[in-house]
Length: 279
Image (cartoon, rainbow, N blue to C red; front, side, top):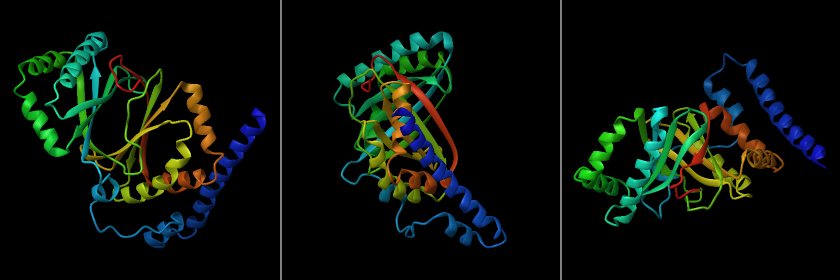
């Protein structure tokens, strides 16, 4: 039974590769034609011309949540102290209801860039909430002391401001143990709408095991970046869940049409910190 299932998955994947190869062959002989002709051969789905910012077209209208993702590269010898300090500060902020922000999840990278901490924050109220938090934190002497001490533990840090895709479920508390995968895609500029159109149809193929945690796109920081956050029981469960998607009619088409939109992609396997709401 397992062998038959594996063969079926391989056949679906081979079918997808054949489609990509056929498209390449079709375009090879017309290399001197305009880019419009090449693109027409690659994309079967017609996408309407943009009439608004993609942040308005793709994000949720019923909420005004803004997200921030932080990547902290920690000195290896400081990771334990860093985790303890982060735990204390996050709990203190959560206890104070006057701060319109919350930590959705905190992880350290297991596979990917080593000695890296990743934090996902949600600001309920959008940019005004972010501004209010920054104003209050800049007057919080305990937080300022934490930042000063934290700076001694870090090699580098960066962050991005994100909006969530309207067709993804909103990140919610979940019990563990789980591992998390953060898949990051650097898209070709101008293709965010196409990406959203395809994934709005395809997300249903990736929700059978409750693996979909959240989907986001950048507003400030590196632009045209997409983050998909997934949860699995373990690496074996991840493999089985991903393979199962290829058994569903339509998943191969989504991969086929979204691959040309990607300039670069990266996968991080992450372990939740003890204080993370997402376990």
